[in-house]
Image (cartoon, rainbow over all chains, first blue to last red; front, side, top):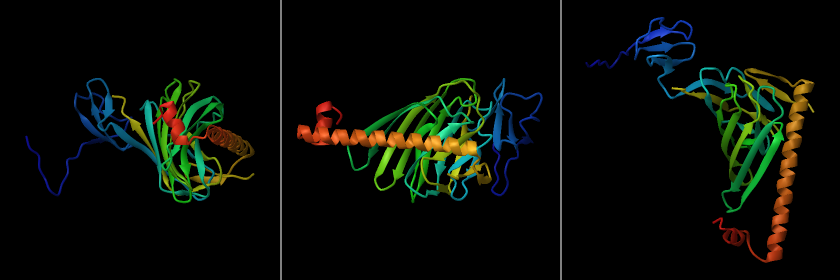
Length: 210
Length: 64
């Protein structure tokens, strides 16, 4: 069977996550308006057609020390990707990550290396108030890539992050850690280690569970 | 210190409690930076004492 058009598109059934077809069939596809996603029924459950789905995009305001993104995590996904790009900082800084209002129990190791040097500097944070150095900021860039496992699920949350900093010395950095509790979180906050950030967008994506 | 924070689309001044949490993070970051700086100074002093470069030290440790 061939369906072809040059000026028109195929329209799926349109529903929301609470008004999905009550008697779905295997392979049925719907366009879900409240999650902005295509969902396919896989015999026993609905799942996003895409493996990675944009959940929310938060634009950062002017000269703020922190930005909190609410409604980022939910039962829909176990694992998440957070990307911050665009924007600048008022000073060379690191970005710290906290989940919900938790300010204790963060454990991490990090390493960084100037692109002009073979020396790797390592550090660690044991039971700290945040995941430290998960991102960086300077007069020319705000940057981070963060992967979170199980922030909403009632399990220990694990984190890995990478960044490229263009401060006085250009360097790359990695950070790995976990938050030692099984609290279920829906929100996270990025905070500068000094100074403020302006502009840029924090995007949160969910990895499909199936 | 007064901080301006953003919660979703709303930008506002931090409450005392929120400011204290940021202060704690800043202090922690400063302590980590100082520890790293102290370590770097100690490393340089040791390299000078040994009379080798950082790259040569990495070679000795099998890190390159």
